[in-house]
Image (cartoon, rainbow, N blue to C red; front, side):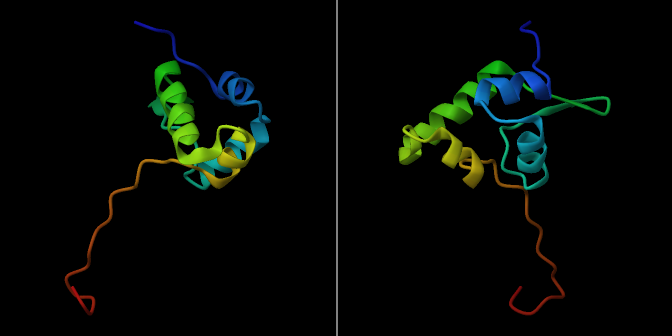
Amino acid sequence: MTPLMNIEEVAKLLQVSRRTMESLISKRRAPPHLLVGTQRRWRRADVQDWIAACELQGKSNDLRGTIDQGLPTKAAPTTTDPQSPGA
């Protein structure tokens, strides 16, 4: 089993501050993470896959810009309200 990374380690890998990581998390634009109790943890492979996907989006020259845009993220599941118009 590979060790999990904490927020500081992911921030260092992405070359951003902890505060930027927290902002990305709150905007749902950070690499996918796991919750271990109440603590967020990242698999290194997931972070590297996220970076690679950002590079495929044409942002390899400016990863910081990609991170700020939050590309890519896994879409959150959506629900539809059967009572709403158009449903």
